[in-house]
Length: 317
Ligand code: SAM
Ligand code: SF4
Image 1 (cartoon, rainbow, N blue to C red):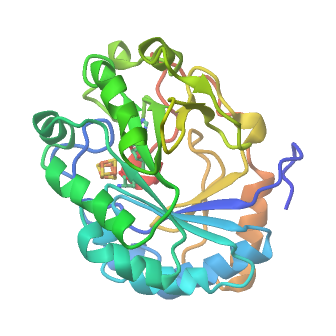
Image 2 (image 1 turned 60 degrees about the vertical axis):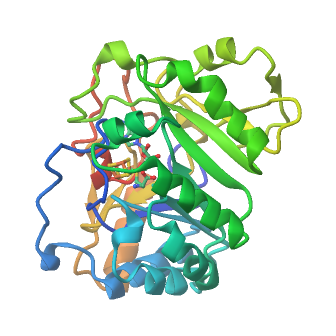
């Protein structure tokens, strides 16, 4: 379905939980979040109903996200049913990877086609610092597990944080030589309450290229990342610049939160609830959300906060 600005909305990002086994400093408060009552969250049945409606409105690609989607007890069942929805051509998942050693194989069997894994540093102490609780070893074991069960075109997502991982850009880029994966650097977004990092931590994606003099422009794939490549590498390096060079004109996304709100734009407060609705009611809300998608996300810079009204773990990225 087309929105009011002629964009074809084909991609739904679905957050299945707000909970997470990490507490990344740019994403979540240190003490986590209060678990909401069951009845306020979408049930599995409502979620699959919503996905059927989404497909009938023209959605072709799904990305399961969170919070951390792999902490959700019924994640395999959700993926199996999502992959089977008529009209859905691609089912992807975004994860911190910690539970991939156990879940990579069942996810692949359930029909997940692609995995994106978040990894901001290759230093064990810094990994523990940024995630507050996590283990780099466990995350890398997750990556190895996903490769071992045959996932292809895995993408590693790295949030650029000045004074934290800018010195590591060359080492992180080396991952594309070591593994058959793509690596994407993403600008830090000033979310609602991502309190630990202020404007001084923002570094634009363009600065990545200063640190990678060997990088050459790669063939572009029409996605939101500008693609580069190191000689002899097995994958691309992508630069995603939501802050310094927004890509709203090409945005084909809609988001569904775990508490059943459709968000037409990551950085806008407007939401359309589908909780408790039958198929027809949900369809009306999907159509309203697509037609209500703003032209762009409004002013967003290192110094102006996102208007999303939620932290990233409550949206899904
Ligand atoms: N837990 C999963 C993970 O970390 O991949 C999925 C959910 S997480 C909210 C999705 C993505 O959002 C991650 O790649 C994370 O790095 C990114 N993210 C979270 N907060 C962010 C922020 N303030 N700016 C930029 N990216 C952010
Ligand atoms: Fe959890 Fe992902 Fe947010 Fe980190 S970025 S706290 S792993 S939801």
